[in-house]
Length: 259
Image (cartoon, rainbow, N blue to C red):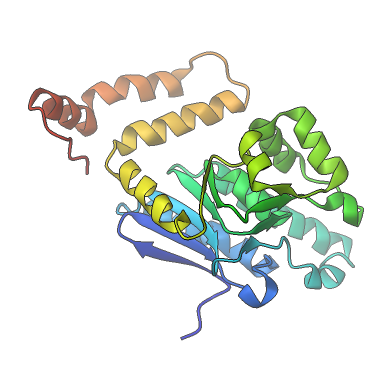
């Protein structure tokens, strides 16, 4: 049975979202942008899934960017073009605000819209063939404010300007130095190490991780003082099941078993 061009695959506590257009270098079609929020919603509601990993099909490329073969039809009409851009923005925002940890596992090239997806994830793990480019300057296009904000958060404004002005490729070693990549592994080790990391997170308190992620995003969005949301997250922890189990395990000198 042929799988969709993007699909969710569950393996233990990991939800794998796979960009599945290997014949097009995993280029992201309009339909894939439309389906991504549905897959994220499914992963969010699945209590067994603790971490979501986004990857391209195969071990050669993450994504070659948007499916440019669709551009002539999409951008020939202004209303269709505006709606397409809105679909992409909504998918990227939903990924950015997804409550569970997200990791982009990157083999090879991560370009344009693929880079946008990787930036919307919490962490980016790559192999020693990974490289990044955001090419609107080659096409006479403008990168979105949301995508630009995510890039600046990772690499800072000067490097973001360099990448967007030049549309050049940033290879894995430089990508790690500028914090575009969080971890780098040999190609043969990337998936194994990513799974190991996901399994380690799965053994920690989901309440702590998800609450921390929410607070960090609020800070990145400009919040500098506590409000009712942050105080509730902080105070509710002391009556939560994870706190009860965590302190009990500490006193009993064993590893906690968070459900």
